[in-house]
Image 1: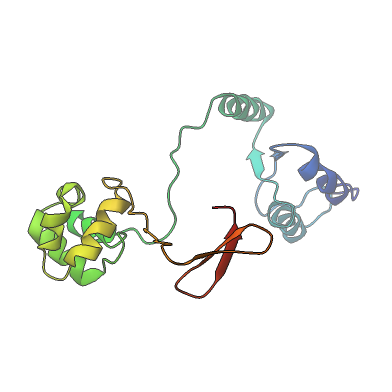
Image 2: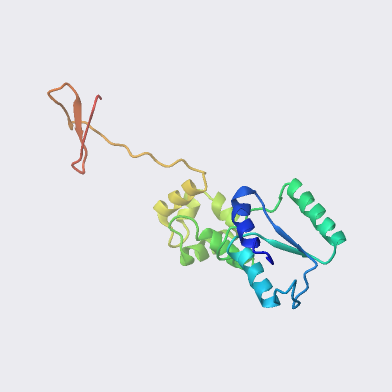
Length: 190
């Protein structure tokens, strides 16, 4: 920074290396370095971290620098075992978490989630219930019960049946044309 190379070096550092970092040795807060005032040093470190996205490590001595480098190398060598954490709302307590999960099911809002939890006692029991038991819960009904079963993977979605009887005619080129109920025309060999 004293000779003006810091920012010129930071530019190619970020794209040139997978996990770059800047290690600053023997820098104490509030003290000038080689005639550069502390506020200018602090501003430069903030720019390196924020504008260039390069993390900064500071050490007090050559021994501490060696320890930091060894620790960083060890951590980069070992796989990271931190599980993915979904961002957003995180309900506290068992009941609120259960209601939150139930509200993720199709057609289930706060009232139906309350009714499902009251009827089955747990998310696991509600998810494992058959369609008839789900439909008996007040406010759920057969259609939502089927949608819940499909969402948790216990039932395959019903495929719509379309009857083309009496709705097929031959086109001049020999292909068939089926007219659907919404008046769109589909062509192709039947």
